[in-house]
Image (cartoon, rainbow, N blue to C red; front, top):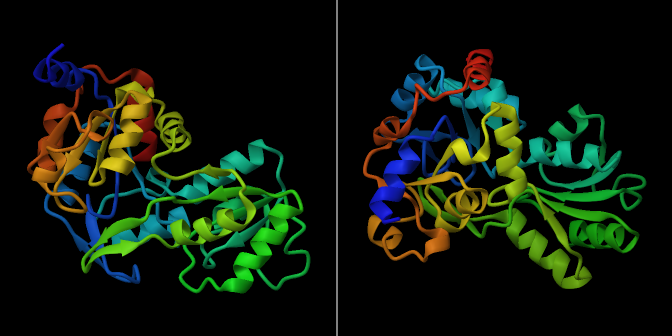
Length: 297
């Protein structure tokens, strides 16, 4: 099948959408304290709601709990319900609870562990009693991380704790240009010392895509994943059989997209986010997916 034929076939099967946030819908500042909306973001999300098309925002950012992040985005005009906001902490809570882990050391800011606590998982931080007596170490957004945090995490892992990581992405897009991913750097230090395997809960893990697919009640292969990073959103979509749609408003320019190898190459490059609406198969949206969309709208 030619690339053109494959793209045409993909258009007929998209019944739900997974959006990246930074670089796709908005640009934040380096401290995540303010947002600059990107063209078409409000219009596209509003149109999907009007059409009852299920969608979710899947960010690798873990600084804010999902409900707080959704509220912040509503504050700048994005029509996002709490349930439509998914963070790596949401997925970690689901994963750890499923593993029967009831206590975790969190390397992150105050909001990183909220989803875990909401799921009934006790969280502790460096310096607290029993910080190394845990079933998991969860690494998230932690700009203030120091060597004591790294040492505590290593001691916990040497004691038998699993390593769970929100994001293993080295950079993300901001209004000031690309910014390093703190959890990437922190995890690199921990793994260099411990050689521990890690469980990734954010993009590009299939765990993240499947979590969103279950929430939207749409098969992964019927989702479009929209993002700005070939090794994050596009790789995740490719791995999961979803439609991969690229934007040029974040990490990657058009000429860079056109040079990507197959595993990182999108099905299409959107010149404008509003072109996404041409990919939605409203007539093929399953009744369960429409019901899920109404519950989330």
